[in-house]
Each structure stands twice: as structure tokens, then as C-alpha cells.
Amino acid sequence: MWWFQQGLSFLPAALVVWSAASFVFSYITAIVLHHVDPLVPYISDTGTIPPERCLFGIMLNISAFLGMATMYVRYKQIYALNPEKSKIIKLNKIGLTLGLMSCFGLCIIANFQKCILYYIHVVGACLTFGVGAIYMLVQTVLSYLMQPEVHSKDIFWIRLTMLLWCCSSIVSMFVSSVILYSGLYGMNLVQKLHWDPQERGYTAHIISTVSEWSLAFSFLSFFLTYIRDFQKISLRAVVSLHGQTLYNTPQSFVTDEQTLLIAGSI
Image 1: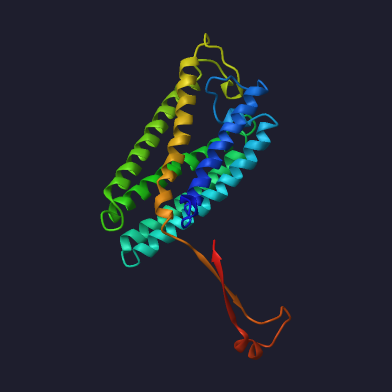
Image 2: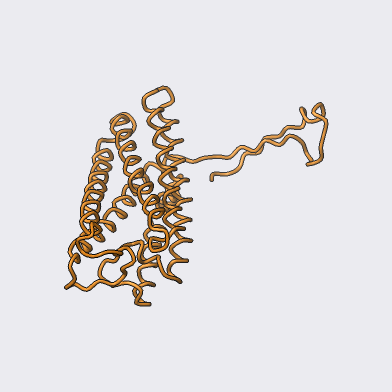
């Protein structure tokens, strides 16, 4: 049996591979069509002009779905491992809420392009990466609380490293973006897709774009740490039939006809 066939380990793996592919494919398409500069453009800029905009949107929407599925399975796993620890259960619920908000932000990024509806796009980015960073913090704290009983200390330190990488990228991107869009280097830079290395503000632009790519891949790398954990879990769907037909049946005839069908692993 291959590693991705064990439990639900294919979920975080699919999330990371698909999301990375959405960035890379949009980037390659935008470069080939000369819509952006080859040297580290903003991720959002690679999904601004058709046809890469269509590819970017579709693939990120699927990434959001994979993210929700992954975060839900993680929630169920932690709950099953710690059914009587109120502190962990509360943090686990908070983590799921934050994770779903982050995935909703990813849908906003996918469907509201930077050059068209900039402020809505920024709201989506804040939800995806800002709230997503808090989600990573909660999961790192949960990893700390569950070691060494549930898993080793190593996984806690790996997730803490991913969290620090993510936070440093956020800080770097925020500072460089504030400097870039402060008005010192001109107005309407949001719409600018091509930069000359000799232009004022080019250094701040490059720092900002590199930080954005670093942030995106630090976020995805965090989910790679779920693969080994997800090899230890499977979910089953239970279907309850309240009758053998879909006709309206008096309740008295239904009681004895209920049947449970157990589906295979999701």
C-alpha cells in the first residue's frame, strides 16, 4: 500500500499539490503571454488577465474545498483523540472556525481579482493568510498540548517552525507593501503589472512579492505535517433509510423499516 492510500493522508497531500499547481500554472501562463514580468510577480497579478484568471479562479476554488475537508478531518481527529479534555476541545472548535474562515477568504481571492476589486481582494487575503496564521497558531498550541501522549515533540517543533516562517513572511510583506503603496513611488501602483529594475520603488516591490510567495508556501508547508497524522484516521458515512420507498408513508409503517447502510471510507 502506497503512503497516500493509508487513511486520509491523500487529503492534505492533494491540498498542497493542487494549490501549488494553481500558482505555478497561472504563473507560467501569464509569463508565456507576457502579462507579467518573469521575476517574481505578485501571485495575484498572475491571475488578473484572461485566460490565466479563469484557471486561477477555478483551481483556487477547488483548493478552498480541499482545505475545508482537510480542516474538518483534523477537527474530528483531535476530538476523537481527546474526548474528555475541555481545553483541547474548545481550542479545537476555535481552530475549525478559523480554518473555515480562511478557506472562505481563499474563495474571495479566487473570484475578486486584485486589479478589479482591490479592497475586496485584500479582505480575502487577510482572511486567508491573517486568519490562516491564527489557525496555524491554534494547531501548533494543540500539538504542544497533545505531546508527548499523542505524538512526539518533533511534530510540535516542525509546526512551530512553519508558523514562525509564516509570521515572518507576513511582517515582511506588510512592511514592504506599506512602503510601496505609501505614495512615495507614485500613485495607482495596484494596477501596475510590469516593473523596470531602474524604477523607484522596485526594491520594495521585489521584497513584497518574494514575501508573498514565501507566505503562500509556508502556509502550504504547514499542511504537509498533517500527512502522517492523517494516515491514522478514516471516516465513514452512515445512511439512515426511513422506508423502502420514497412515497409518503404513515409513520407507523416506517418504524420497522429503518435500515442502516454503512458506506466505505471517504
